[in-house]
Length: 476
Image (cartoon, rainbow, N blue to C red; front, side):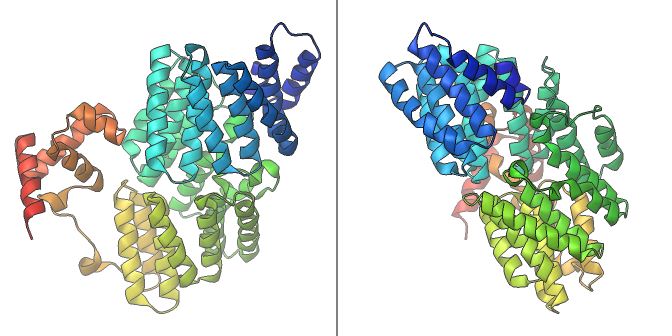
């Protein structure tokens, strides 16, 4: 039954579970765990209302049994049903309760790892980075301590995605390398590894390396539902490389699979942002009908995921792009700033610059372009900077020497946003391991940041960093 679920054969898993439930059981605990499996299968088969009706009594039954494993599995089942009904906040409350149950017994460690991964993914959808970081930190520590290789791979994949969104792309590459080095053969892993690597390398304008990652994908890479969950990484990387080669039509065609509608597609969290890219590319390719279809599909997807900020932001971007409406795109920028994902913010600012230029507001366009480039500089998205400059140059807008914000070579203004975070923690007397834990970075990355900080501030010790920080905060 578990094997069938891992393979994505939920119909087969439901059949086996219901056959088992027809038998006599030696304990109420075993029956509850099978009932929880039935809830998971039903929810995944788009029978979430039926699953919810079964899951509620399981939570009450688990409470009366007092068994930590049963409690964690019952809350997991209920959270899963709620998630499939689009009730994300309610789902996360039961995820947290399931984790609390699982912490009571080592027998529930595997369920705790699963729930921590779900907690991280759920709060990532709500743009709540601190909760994501805490959940992934606990999951990694537990997976290492219990030698749960399979769960550790999932944790590393979640970490890599988290760092990609944060703009910590060196950490993304390190994370997928750690996942790839683990002795597992999960079918979805190559899609994560090669998809995220190709995306990072493509945005950094390392085209040949990005192409090599896509070429390394095995045949039938998207055969399982778990692998298809990460398809957007690969599709976006293919589109990026085609656009970089001056083939916007091919870039658009690379993303068209995301226009397919269905229950699974509309519940895919990443899909609305891909649809917004379809709108941009379709308009640039002169395919207004495709752009209109993508706007409509994004509207349906956002309606299916009403609680989350990401799909709503993507829909604003879609509508703003299609209408070249600066007002809608300004609202998208404001929402992007709240989410604090640099690549998303850069895209919306770039679109806003184009819309303002179309409306003759060249000063406003230049300002938005400058801000977009600053957002792209944070993760090192060199191709995005080049694309933004080219799009605005064709409309008569250039950053120029006055608008380009060139970072000085030395001093506090020379520090990147990531280095500034590290420097302030160094000034507080934190050690490298403490900083790595606080910022959820590897120790090697922290050491690299500290070396750059010392060089840019032209000091030799951490105490000197602290002294400069104190003088800077006390100054005018």
